[in-house]
Image (cartoon, rainbow, N blue to C red; front, side, top):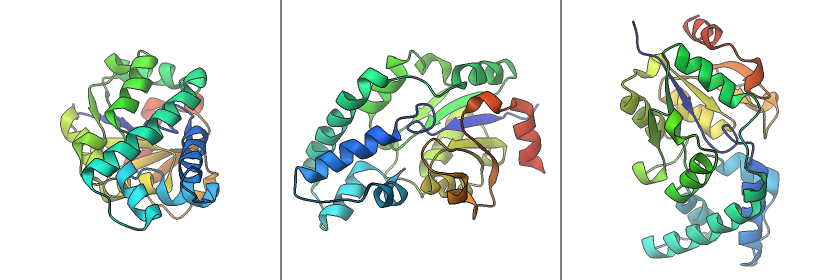
Length: 222
């Protein structure tokens, strides 16, 4: 039987938390005298790694040490804001339970640093549910580059054509497209219209409660 995999972006997908990420970024930049538009910021950065975002908005390259220190400060601010609200997206736990029963491999592919992966997956006691995890520390480039999705598929032993990505951001859907993967979009942060130009999207949903495991793979092969 062909090995199949579901690959989940983490922030905005496994957890409905992107508003807290944006708030923490805005606070981070405000402390340094930068005024950033929230909607524009999300559309241009969701899925990119912290050092890529900072270099863009500061307008200059940062040393590895500078980037690491700033990234830690920003993510610590995010975890402080979101900790009281930490919860899986509606229907997620039931959905992955059904997927595992169907023999589907599960992976996380995220632009988040290890500290945020630990915060989310261990905080929700979900780490044990996944066959593979790939994060910012594992790849040099963030989305829309396909690296993190390809690595996640490789770690599950699944071909890209048999992997379905779950995403909430256009840059992530584009990364899936470049990886040769179909995508399911969750509208936790942006409306369906934001994804209308992508030909690799097979479903657009608010949460996981309305998804059928086998129907997704049937859609992916049509």
